[in-house]
Structures are given as structure tokens and as C-alpha cells.
Length: 412
Ligand SMILES: NC(=O)c1ccc[n+]([C@@H]2O[C@H](COP(=O)([O-])OP(=O)(O)OC[C@H]3O[C@@H](n4cnc5c(N)ncnc54)[C@H](OP(=O)(O)O)[C@@H]3O)[C@@H](O)[C@H]2O)c1
Image (tube, rainbow, N blue to C red):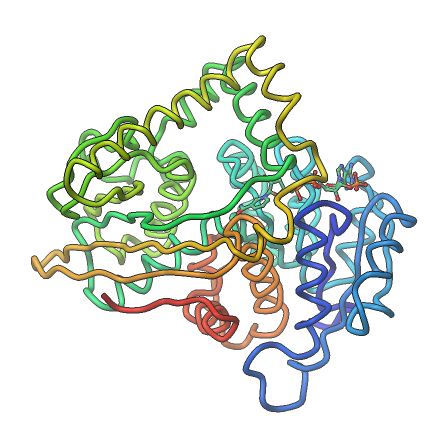
């Protein structure tokens, strides 16, 4: 595919978009590990958004790698501007959210134009709409549409693919978050609130969010494994040998992993039971921490569901455009372990880890590498098109890039 640009970053004026722009400015023309010259070293990229003035400000802070990057004016509410933009590039990388509010016209434009796409959504209802509206269009035009290409849900999705490579088809797997230090942004909160509001107002949306197979390509073909609800309380877990509590992103990541499995004809396990939890270690201290985590999470979501407490919370929480400061982005980190048991009864685990605030610092690395991978690694990617997950679109090729960029995917 020959186009004016390899990739366009849409939303660079937002909190996360700016971090992705900084990552691309440092790495787009020299991806980590690249040793030869050629197409890999000459990324043609551009910044896009609705305010040229704001984009110029962002560009002026990008240093030599971003100083001459072109600027494109486009608005999510203006379909013509989106169509014109996606026709100029191989890949659209977007941080314009909440996606349920602004995202679908861009997915549709990319799906029609055969333009690959990656985003940072963690909004299940938006992904379902994207699948229903754009799957056929994207397949026909040979576009790879990749949602959840950040901390949600790349470590889960690529981690499960890595575990499968070690153990073969699985009958169960549990991802345990062992360490997670980081903050959140106003944009993430705004997206969470859009989701909560939709669920409150619409019963079918509530049902969708509660469905473990909400992102299934064929709901009737999914296995019937009994209760597969995400953990909402704390308990001692014999499989992983520790106290466990709910993990806030489980309701998104588990759906993405199950979709990935279904898109590969259940290669990871026809009767795979997959869960995500927070790990709290053993003993009384573990039990206490698990109980505390459950209470904080339940209380936090509860507070955002109801008018008066939500109004109060909104006064103190970050606004769109705001997020964790540089110190906390730098000192954040995450480590997850996925425990698995194969269909043959063999047990094993893999570790997925990264440095920097997972939601922002690490996410900007992950999304930047996804965009570069879609732009440059075409020949090595699976011949699969439509609305995909990170592992089904890019798999081990993306994993290699992330390892070169500093992430860990290790056995044990
Ligand atoms: N999955 C993950 O791991 C992860 C991590 C981080 C963030 N996120 C998600 O990423 C999204 C962005 O978060 P954030 O904190 O960066 O948000 P943010 O700071 O509020 O940024 C939102 C961006 O969207 C742009 N925008 C809004 N309306 C637009 C329109 N009509 N046309 C074009 N651009 C428009 C804004 O442009 P202006 O500057 O012109 O207003 C801004 O650049 C959220 O949905 C969040 O949940 C996900």
C-alpha cells in the first residue's frame, strides 16, 4: 500500500496523545533494535486534531524527531475531514476519547478505506458497536482494526498468546496483577463515566457489559462453562495459591482475550476458562489487603454511579487533559503473572512486566509500537483482517517490538 504517510496520530493534544507523540518523535525514525536502514528507519508520520494552534504547541515541544512533522486538521464530528485524513495514511493511531462519544466515525472511515487502525479504548460497548458496524467493511478492504492497543489489553492478550506457546491448548488461565503502581487521567475517567451512564440508562447495554463473551464473533458458538463472571469479592484461590481480589480492568481484558481465542477457532483452548484478578499474597496480611482492595474498588465505582457522590468526586478528580505528573509516570510499574493449566494437565506460568505508569507511560510505548508495527511489519503479520485484537492482528511480531522497547515477557 503506498500512501503519503505511514501513520497519523489523532488526538496528540490530549494527555495520552502527547505522550504517544513524544514516543514517536524519539522512536518513529529509529525503532528500538533496528539495525539496518530502509523503510523501518523512515517513518512518515503526522499529527492530527481539531485545533491546529494546539497541535503546533505540542509539536514545538517534540524536539528534533518531531519538529518538522506535518499537521492535519480533522474533527471527529466532521466525517469529510476524517475521510480525507484516512485516505492519506497506512495507519491511523487515535487517542481521541471517550471513544463511545467520538470514535465510531473514524473506525468506519478506516474500515472503508483499507486503513489500519489502533486505539486505546477500554469501552466494551464501543468495541461491540465497532464489530457490528465495521467487521465486514474492514475485512473487505483488508484493514486491521485494533482496539485496546495500550495497557488495556495488550499485556493480557499477548501474555495469553505467550502462555499458549509454552503450554499448548489450555483448560484454564488466571492473570494475577502482582504489582501495579500508577495513576489515571481525566480522559480515562470521562470514558468510564460514559460507560456507567450508558449502562444505567439502557438495559441491553447493562446486559452486554455483564456478558463474558460480549465481544464474541459468534455468540452461539461460545462454550457453555457455567459461571464466568468477573470476581467481585475477595477469596483464597487454590489455583494460584494466594488471596485474590477484583482487578478493575478484568471486565474489558477478559472479553478481549476470549475474542482473540474465538477469532483463532479456539486454538488457545476450546473450553478455556480465563479470569483476571489482583493478587494479594498469602496469610492474614494477604486476606486483609484483599478485603481492603475489594472495598475500595466497590466504593469507588459506587460513588461514580450516584449523582451527589459523583458531583463531589468530579470536583477533586482530574479533568480531561490532566493526568499523573512526570515523577509518578516515571516511577510507576506493573508486573502480572498468568498461571495456566493445559488440556493435558501440565501447569506453568508467564510473567508480563513493564516500567513506567502502566496507563500512560507504558501505554504510550505500547500504542506507539502497535502503530509502528502496523505501518512497517505488514509482510510479517498474519493475513487476518477485520476488527481484531492486538494478538490476532500482530502477535509475536508486536511482542518482539515491545521486548526491544523494554517490556518483559518471560517464562515462570
Ligand atoms: N487503554 C488504556 O490503557 C488507556 C490508557 C490511557 C488512556 N486511555 C483512553 O484514551 C482516551 C484519551 O485519554 P486522555 O486522558 O488522553 O484524554 P484527554 O486528555 O481528554 O484527550 C482527549 C483528546 O481527544 C481530542 N478530541 C476531543 N473531541 C474531539 C473531536 N471532536 N475531534 C478531534 N479530537 C477531539 C482532544 O482534543 P482537544 O485538545 O482539541 O480538546 C484531545 O486531544 C480515553 O478514552 C482514555 O480512556 C486508555
